[in-house]
Image (cartoon, rainbow, N blue to C red; front, side, top):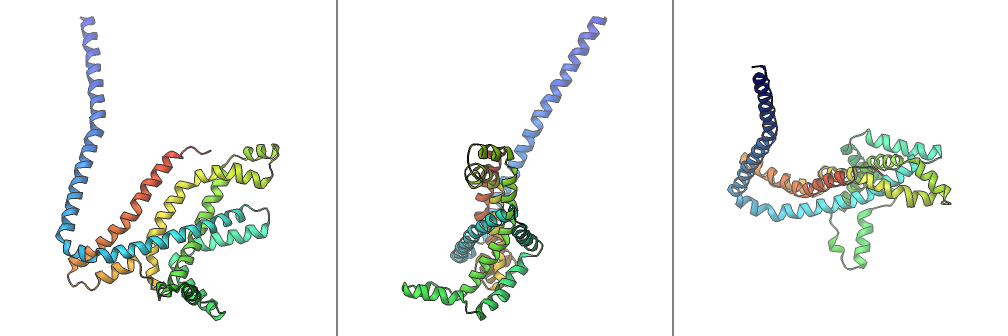
Length: 295
């Protein structure tokens, strides 16, 4: 009787374990199926929403596509300049000279401690006036250069807004990238620098050949994330009369009397931002997995 009870008890324990394992396996699978079903329903609903307002979408598509191109150009130029500012700032933060470190630290703290919208306004309404009084007019300079090339008609009337808007975004994101690059450089083991110096390399060669290649691999994922945010923040250039995607979206939405159509225009404009940002988001996730192990 004891042997039979022992066998029954073991079989009962096994059945409980088997049932628990089955529930543990089927639970996440069920949630995955549920997620994809809900995602499919949401996608079908959104496609129907676009189809319902297809006439409005086809009418405004070329305009918003043009605005998307302007936004992309602004973002790419701003990110290139921000990378330059950030790299120079990172070298300043790591400098042995206190004055250079102080200037770089002040730049980072002031920029990160003030809103980007205020900075854009200062560049457009403040620094532009000061530079103009000193004889610096970006529109006139570019117009003269393009006139020599017989292409002055390509210079937009609001070129000053584009110029100072790009400078403002670049200066702002350069401060954030300064800390990204500084952290990436400092994350490399100092022993590698000592090993490079012991092999006969000077400090510049060690930085260029040993430290920077490893630091770049570490900073690529956060760099991509900041690029996504910069694309979204480029919408702030609308306050300084730059005709980009956000400005065009507002210009097309506000004349709409029907609130449903007005909402659709905003949703349609947001879709263009999603088309720009989502591939970069996928790239950032891939890079984060690829470079998760720091070198």
